[in-house]
Length: 70
Image (cartoon, rainbow, N blue to C red):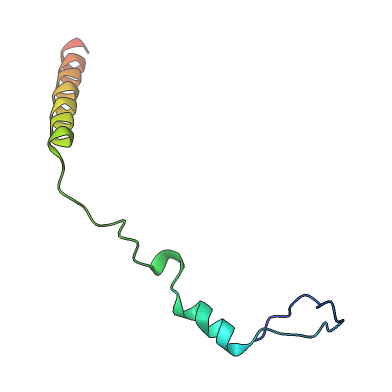
């Protein structure tokens, strides 16, 4: 279904978009279905692995404190 456009300076107010323009918009996927690469993962760097290890150690210590002090 054609979409009405704004009136042109010449006074024509019934212009509509053409079919090729609509086809171009349909060729590009948009929305939740497009592949953005967000679900892909990469190997962690050494710094990230070390940060993960330290975080896990600290969480274990925190849980141990709570179990022993509660």
